[in-house]
Image: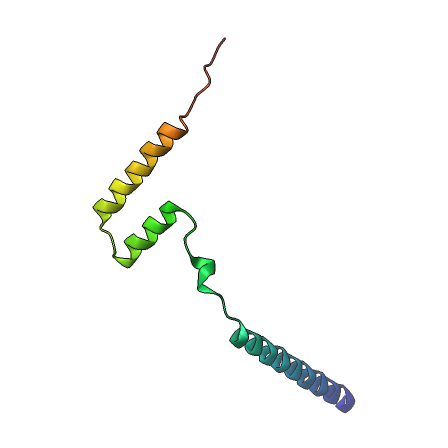
Length: 87
């Protein structure tokens, strides 16, 4: 019985040390990880307008007017053609 208890304590200690080592490695990797700002830069006109709205550079009305202009331009350049339903 004493040997079984000692074995359990040794296994528990090994598990604790293994977890501490993994956590230390993970925290070291997390500190060295740096994400470039360019990764989050908007890639479209809509994204730029959204970023400007969130930063307070433009008002909601200006945002809506700009989005309406983009939608109108898109409709002119690429009109939506719906196929007719024929029996």
